[in-house]
Amino acid sequence: MEQIRTLIRNEKTAVLCGAGISVASGIPAFRGTGGLWARYDPERFATEEGLTSLFRNDPRVLKEFLCEWYGVLLKAEPNAVHRILVRLEQEGWVSGVITQNIDDLHRRAGSIRVAQIHGSAMGMRCPHCGIRRRRTPQECRRLLNGLSSASTRRRIRAWILRLRGTCPECRGRLTPAVVLFGQQLPLEPLESARRYIFEAGVLLCVGTSGSVYPAASLPGYARQHAKKVFVVNPEPTALDFSADGVFRQLAADFFEKLSLH
Image (tube, rainbow, N blue to C red):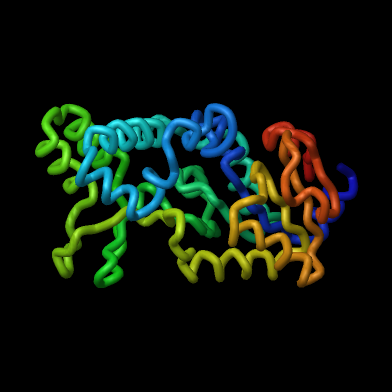
């Protein structure tokens, strides 16, 4: 612990965050026992083709998934780790947060330099003209209430379309600003992630299995630029073997013990 404490005091740190960060906020991990993909097949619920097929052929199942997932997101609040990272950024220790999570909790906590490399479930974008907008929690709750009360296939489809919304510029149908399986990551947040790493001397990988690419390539990018890489996770990860140090801890416990003052 003393080694990383000294490094962070002398060098800025970029923080790569995975699903483990948000578990304490009540958001289950996607993978593993009890994860979302243990109950919902990602080929059906996390690909454009699968979601389109569900909308057309099985809208009730899609309604169940959307109500559960957005219901969890709307109940979640930033936890102690989100707040600690805000403070570390404000005090100049952290160059930026790189998150694989789509829950928006880092921004809601107050982090400014955030690269949301998999997008945000609260964001919407137009695939035709590129317009982006963010939904407020209140707007999402209203739409979710309407969807959950719909009972016929026709009404369910109508509320799902309302949940997507319409582009104010071209009137095209909006899509959630998240990266589905098989889609390329947007270039802008990936460039921001690399910039945060380049500006830092340390990359701290927290609560991530290190198995999802291209996010899992960022520690390699850090090493190519002579940055130290540390892993904080209670379970073994794909990043452990090449890391400069591994802390087999929950994120909250690690940051509590870090104490930079």
